[in-house]
Length: 87
Image (cartoon, rainbow, N blue to C red; front, side):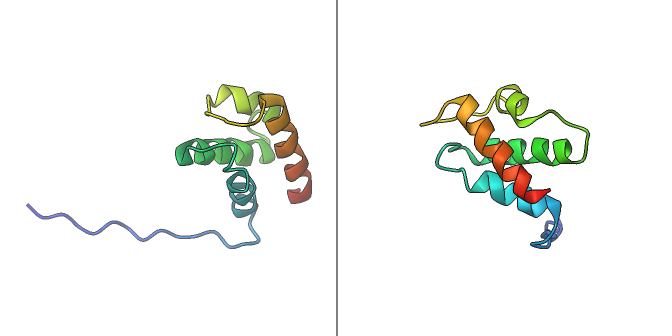
């Protein structure tokens, strides 16, 4: 039995909403050490910006991400401020 190579990954352009949002979350990696947690939070924030998801204040707790060196309320505030520059 043989397997095929994985499909190539299409990267978002630097100007897209998704890329900007994921970059915002990635910039906070000192507070969110687990990569999968950052991806999950980024996805939730993109949904929020598209009108389908919860606000950052709710997402930081409902996504059950592991944080370090910061309180949930402070992280939510940083995310909210960052999202204002994206919109």
